[in-house]
Image (cartoon, rainbow, N blue to C red; front, side, top):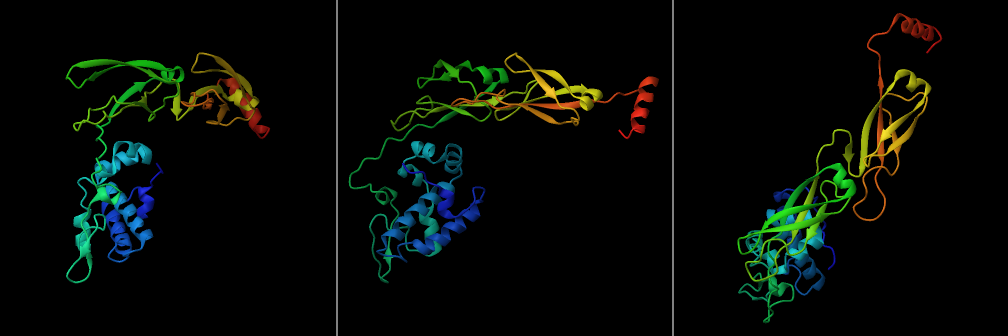
Amino acid sequence: MAQKDYYKSLGVAKDAGADEIKKAYRKLAMKYHPDHSAGDKAKEEKFKEISEAYAVLSDAEKRKKYDTYGSEGFHQQFSQEDIFRGSNIEDILRKFGFGGASFFSGGRKSGGGSRRFSFNPESMFGGGGGRQSAPVKGADMEYEIPLTLHEVAAGTSRSLSLQNPSGGTETLAVKIPKGMITGKKLRLASRGQPSPYGGPAGDLYIIARVVEDPVFKSTEYDLQLNREIKLTDALLGTRISVPTLDGKELSLKIPAGTRHKSKLRLAGNGLPHMKGDGAGDLYVEIQIAMPKKLTKKQKELVEALAGEGL
């Protein structure tokens, strides 16, 4: 199925409010409604497109599903019949001044000569005529799991307690792949809610949430840690040992003249990617330790350096 960008169809931004979406649909409906374009197949198809977009984006729950799972994931859960179920398009179009909602179920001439229509999404998309609707899928479920950075790096497993259709509890062992950073989802097909209409069960989505680590900070697949060095090491340069998430120690060169809070990169030593090869990077933020109090000798040396223009 081709990807459908409902926001693009209506010409609105993804953060558009309900009023803006309604206004955009009204403007396009005035242009493409069959009352204004009888016999123009291209405009009829465009009207179908914008009506479908409005049916989804004007419904808070459907819009949330569309934003969360994208076009492909959304259409795996909603048939065309589902999309228009509960839609207020017919009322909206009537308020716009059209006699009925659309041409989708045929139509007839009214007394004034204007063609009147009744809204029928089934016939709109080639249904009707005895065609049976596809079974309605059960609702999807989401289950958030906290993961440590070490679990993200190596992968892990979880045992989930789920309620089965008979009301009992079922324990499900789930393998969590490496690289499952915050927001990443793992789909378990047919592990969601059962369908109340005899269709297939929904899916279960495992959503990762990475917990804070005492040493490393994470941003997507990159890691960062802080390392403190002496002022003289920052001026003259040195080498320091840097721990990695998998327990290794790497040698990092600190160039002479390194500034406070400079970040040095150790490529490929971050978190592994969830899909495919490769990994993020490890960044080391250098923090220069300033002495709180100088000895007499240190003060003399610093004053001498100041005299040399340092």
